[in-house]
Length: 385
Image (cartoon, rainbow, N blue to C red; front, side, top):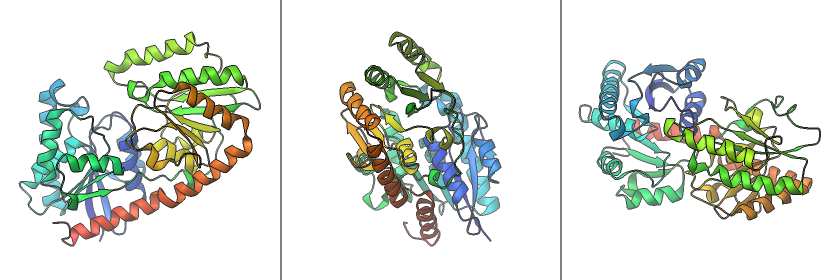
């Protein structure tokens, strides 16, 4: 009989890398050994995506702490307590002994549940960075004491966690995996959006300030002036209500830089492989990145990348081998690297091939999921106490 485990992420209303990581594990986990049960809020597309994978979903709460803490204090408290009760119920009714949390508030709820269930094993996959507010850090230090394991996506974030007081014996690095190299090729939605022979340069991410789309747009203008056949694509959704002004500013920049006719906006879809498959190279211009998931996905599809050397990106992208790294904010350097790849098809092919090999070696979702299964087995056998 498969052992039930809880995978939990309350931020289902904003589908991104955190939710995709949890979905990957639920999709690829060995169902003969483990039965995933997902706790999440009822909003967004995550519950439906999980249901299509025949994963049991428990929609709990209202997702109020998508806005975090003091902005919605009552909703936050209600949701935390509702999730805590559901974890306790599942532990008692179905014998759940592992909770794998994918956001901090679920980690907190699981830690509260452990006060009633001493043998509950808690894993937190911290997909954030050292940008958390002070009160969140205080809560996480308390939760660290209750965790069996605190995983993070990169060595640079791991070092930050250790500075924040995490016991090194509980710390481990688990990068995101990708299965884009396993998906069947299909026609790209960009196929009919540009003129024949166009080179497509794409960027993927929520349209929020931390992604620094201004840098991408300014670099695009420089590239387009030198190579009129290049086309650009932004794949991303608007941020939360408080971030809509930024989205409007980016729309205004597209017009001000006269990019309207050569830049396409695409709404994100559940399977981005079809979109990335239509790119010739992928760009990331972020101020900070906890991992750089879309870069790894592009590498898995043999696409070279150009990215700012921030956060954990240098751990995933080997400069000069699978693409190029540039200093954050250096528009001219980004434009020059994009031009170099635009001008050299052989270089794009070589870097794309090396990126594919790197993705297969280090980021194959099947390998990453097997590692998680081994972790679950060790915890169930009493290791990590």
